[in-house]
Length: 372
Image 1: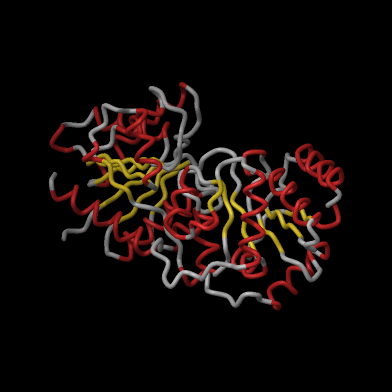
Image 2: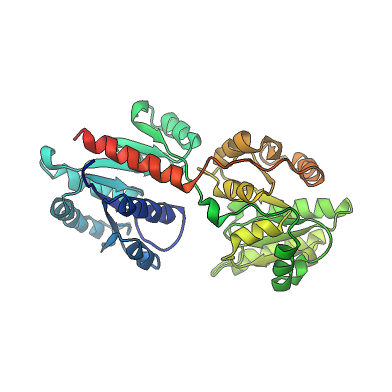
């Protein structure tokens, strides 16, 4: 197979799942002997991208302004000068700019256009650009179904489901319980001490992550005599002081204020899973994939979550005992008790791996490039 040049486009390289996937595919391309170019406004992940052997071109292609249209010409020149074989857009505005740039190139010289639908974006004309790729990668069956439901004119044959994946080495199986991991967490967050179970809900400081649902679950468990504790890493973040104050008020009202820790994100999330007895995924809005489910199950911890979106899809396949009808708090409580009393067996193998995602994406690139 000849050496390919693949140009990926996204708004910026700061943090997040889209950014992580971009770096992971860039690294896989370089490892396989191809050329990887990423276009974005820059950010803290640029050094990691370059360390992997990829190239970065800085253009502010994510700013929602008419002035951003000026980058169409720059992108067209970039595609021509690099001899790009594939242009892979991962976000809506960059996809529109890339599409406009490609339309201005002679048909025989245009790179192939690939898009990835990473989220369940509001349907409409603007989001519809993500269905215009010659190949459209969907990060789950949930996303594929969403695309076909809201964009029925889309040819199902061009949709390719390539789920996100994790590096198992970064989420090694841990003994359950893991007293050493729990002791390290308690040393940092004393409120999480005690002999009872530790519940973990990682997620940003937004109501969409279901923090209030977790607080009510904690209160119900403690009312039943469980010395349960709840850790919410990621809830406390800059600009969310009012939201944290609201959660703290609710925790006090429920009588669980001394049994919950609202903290900044942890850089040792695998250890957080290992320290916990039950991992919660209570997003109020359906998610496209649900990486928390895969990470926690890889470590060997049961997951309790609302059965909708990508989370429901993963739980149905990997650990159906933890799936609860959305927003049924009675069922959430009874299922939590059951999982704590009788944790389901750990998975023998995790099918959602980083290598599987990388290989499937590169195979798609090779296939579409060969038909140029």
